[in-house]
Image 1: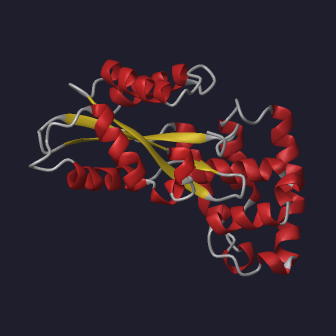
Image 2 (image 1 turned 90 degrees about the vertical axis):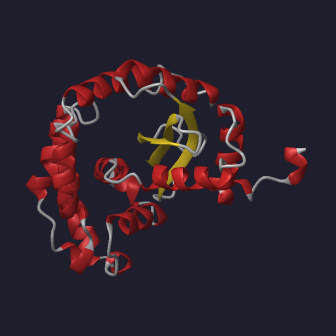
Length: 245
């Protein structure tokens, strides 16, 4: 949570059955950290009787509460509304604003000296995210984009980049996120938007190793306590044995 701070994040939720035929949802978070890196972290698993809206709400709330997250602060009420809408419209994976953001992503690509850049294509998603970009900020974004693209194309440090993820890290490295905060906000929104569920699929694979045929009666708490350090080895490698003891 210290790593996320006040940054944007998305919740990744997927469902599967384990060796004991119990149905559960895996929950992870995706965000852009203070170094401009895209991070996905598994935070827990919860057994559920079904995946309807009410059950999902309870499962997600339990996981967030376990990690001492402020439910109101992270707009779970808003998230519940989105879940309900998505369940009612299963054929629509992304909302209109999310679709706009997905469509704008190629225009942020830094390859070939930002050849794909088109200013008006980057303004549209900002206008769709009215809670994040006020009318004044949309106007300011236009001004920032005009200077930003000149800066990027004439700066040797940004001439070899090949992806938006590389661009985000380089922007933070050279403190361009302070110079172009609204452009960087658009980049982090694009990187945070989920397009795949690799993280939770990895969690399901790990679950098959930990909860197997000879060890099939594990409760949620014990399974979570085993899965989180197994999946997030790089985080737990940084914790001193003395702290664990």
